[in-house]
Length: 86
Image (cartoon, rainbow, N blue to C red; front, side):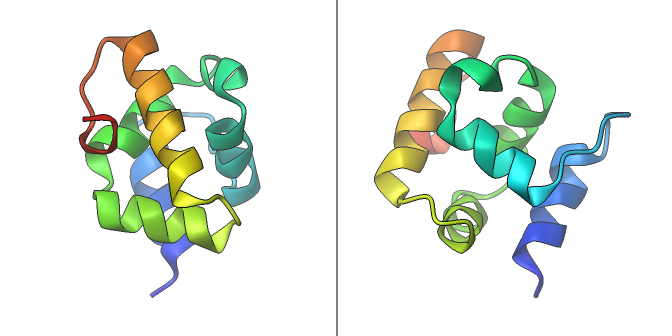
């Protein structure tokens, strides 16, 4: 299974702008910049399973603790509740 392709097909589906795996990884690591793509981030945290989120993060060198911090920060920003932020 191509983790990045699976994740990106969900994250990008409803949007004209299509993020690459590198761009998504950047936004996961740069919380303030993530606010510029709120729909993509919301799709990642709400529609991609936590297991697949973790696999994607690991594949791009993001430690699980940093992914949880990103989910928590985006949850506070968006007002949404995400499994990794709980």
